[in-house]
Image (cartoon, rainbow, N blue to C red; front, side, top):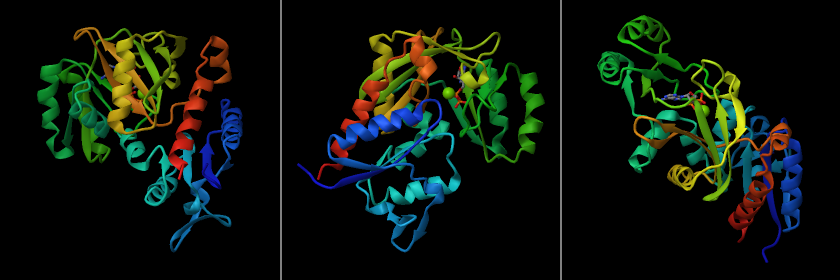
Amino acid sequence: MSVDRTIGMWLYRNSGGKKIGKKIIKKLRDRDIETIDNIRLHNCIAKNGHILHHDLKVDKLDLFFSYNASEQTQYQMYLYQALNRVIPMINSYESFALTEDKFHTSFVLRHEGIQTADYKLCHRDNGHELKKIIKQWDKMVYKPTDGWGGVGLTKIESEASLDMLMPFLNQMDLRYFYVEKFINYDNTDFRVDIVDGEFVGCYGRKASGNDWRTNVTSGGSVFMREPDDEVIEVATKAALACGVDIAGVDIIYDLEKEEYIVLEVNGIPAFATPEQEKLGLDFNDKKIDLIVDLIDRKTSK
Ligand SMILES: Nc1ncnc2c1ncn2[C@@H]1O[C@H](COP(=O)(O)OP(=O)(O)O)[C@@H](O)[C@H]1O
Ligand SMILES: [Mg+2]
């Protein structure tokens, strides 16, 4: 057996995260892997060849498990990138950064033959491209490429509404425009959790009232949902294409094309909250076990 393994962890603590963290630490200890918890890269200092968290040289750890979506900062991401040049991280910086960008994700997924919404990206100087595309698509969605929670998404339903929107977009000093074809779907989605290429669990979200966005932050609600083999296969392929060890893949069913399409891949999908567990979402233990296995494997020398 390998000896003296120590990993660093930064896991969200709200919404049941604290309890999840404790379980992971205990299960790792059972395998002789020590965890130094709550290492916020945001508070670390890089000095010569080291990244220091107080006296701890984070770069000497065997692995770093980064799992906190809401407290990310630009500085933390910058150190995430540096740290991953010298030690393994879950998720890898490269794959995580990919999933943080909607265009890069769609680009890679489509390149790998995985269905996404049709999209178009153009430089802000080429705004006239959007005019062409709305004629073809009828309806489209403007999306910030680095957004979350449905924030900033704008449905454009006609040429006239695009004409209204353009002056605002031009004022915002954006570098580029990213738009997707608006998918005709039933306002519900699938969130499929994958760890290490294995299916972990699935639930659905339903948009509220007349909203077309399923995000809980946009009023959507979570419901129990049995996945079929096809939706699991799409999610597994998407996680693999992005290279993320841990993924929450958001999928909707395109009613026109009659196929599943991947909307986005989340690199820090939340564990089921205590309330969701009461609803019957019971995948947390399986997810913990798969993460522990993964850490064990990635640190075995
Ligand atoms: N192309 C689209 N067609 C129809 N609905 C969409 C499309 N893209 C996103 N949506 C809806 O908007 C929600 C948020 O979009 P998403 O791309 O996941 O961004 P975010 O990161 O803000 O969650 C989705 O969950 C879905 O309900
Ligand atoms: Mg989303």
